[in-house]
Image (cartoon, rainbow, N blue to C red; front, side, top):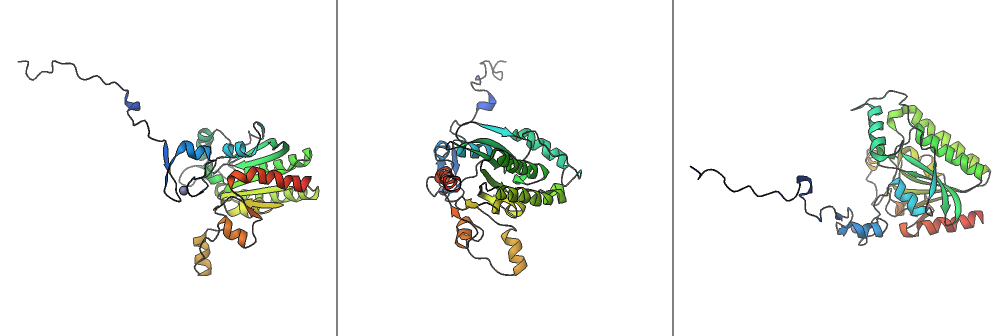
Length: 282
Ligand SMILES: [Zn+2]
């Protein structure tokens, strides 16, 4: 009765299950602005700017430092970590959220402080990480930015801060809000000793970060098409009961209305900052 028995061996599985994917998968990405399909390598070599429509994709904190600094840098205050002072719980405990982000991103909070060279000139550069709880500013971000300003004063070098943030960190309540004052005061001291601070606003820069250091630069420059504002457009529309104009809260609109000094394409950003520092410092 061999006819219902499988006498031949089953076909051998050549590839292990986790490799059973089309090899081109993940090599392409769709531009969120023009919907063009872009090869990821092309996007990377173009500084994460869409080659078709010039849409600026978001950079992470490290990519940003790689873009602006010459090669290597020294990181400062990398060990500062939030102590969750309010023992805050929303849909889940803030402490868990912190731990998860720290593990995932390999950093303790939403900003990196680096000391390095920008076109050969020593600078202190802060770079915000949006993936870390929306780049929100709690006690750690506030403290790190303040220390960066103080370090710039000590070493007598310019300060560059690249913002990418949803605003103050709600899980730290008033303590987050106090950072606005602390950072602003440190920047005022930097101003007194006549050291330049260049603020770079990237998509998005909103809330408490806009309301403090992002708008306090000697030069406030933004990348094209970045969302920059305090409250979101829907909140404003509901408050003033008016429809907002096209392009409201985008870099170009803010430049036209005197909130920014320049909108600079990513490929020109480093040269622009270097030039500005040559002009400001000599
Ligand atoms: Zn595009």
